[in-house]
Image (tube, rainbow, N blue to C red; front, top):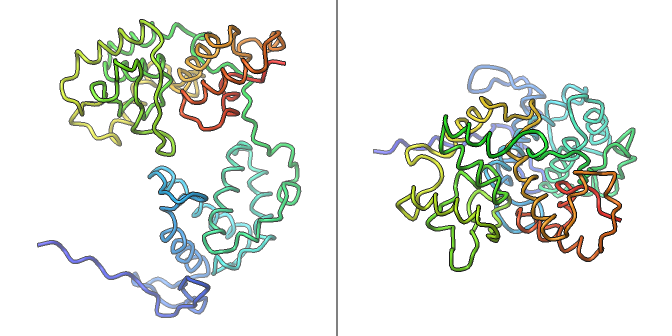
Length: 356
């Protein structure tokens, strides 16, 4: 017999703000079910969580659900926001009372933290804006400019243009390193090869099903699972090396639903195995060599095949070489599509600044 679900906790004193029923500020000093007194902070924590729990499945702008990773990240960031406001001296109990002064205090604090990159700060600001929007309070930040939020707004611009070659090709022999990994774990080696030959993200390689996602008649692979934003895509097959590797995968899988991870291992558990194995071979951010770097190498190869020029990030001094702007844009658009991005501008994060 299934255990009955515990009744949802409702504070004895509540206050209604719009569509939300929050714990009242008057709860302060009362004992909770654990015998500890409610404080200004615990009241605010409880009320922030009510907003997150109700809305966290929703996309910020579109009528579609979000991934588990996004939900988890939002929850962590909203809790961090609550923590930061408290430590900055603001004794709020109701999240609907967040004003521009609170936003400014948060953004200036995030800007001052040496452990946060500008991109991380911008992401925090985006989640704060989403959180306020859930309560119908988007007007709080609607007219706030970067100059209102930051002491040095020019530093807080998200730069999608890469000026550093993050591919493996200039640091090591990718095939040699992948073969070394194969001696330790063939699954991880195959997954790295999928990233190297087709530009797949790590999670996409784990969930790739050779007998279902490889379409020989159309000379493409379907990337359906593990994609960013749940957007499926196709990646064209253009080399003998790609075909040979896919045929090898077919020879080692038997069922149409067989993926690139062991049948007995859940994806969440495989993630830790994957990164543990790659770290053993110096494939980590600390070493300047990451699995994601294989996507960069793939982008560079595709761009050069299409444009006839090396990726600008490989040689910034020659990025002013004569190149037809239309050819450049078409090549970047195809690279973006193959990598699973819906904006051509993102290609600059892999290829580097535009040729001029």
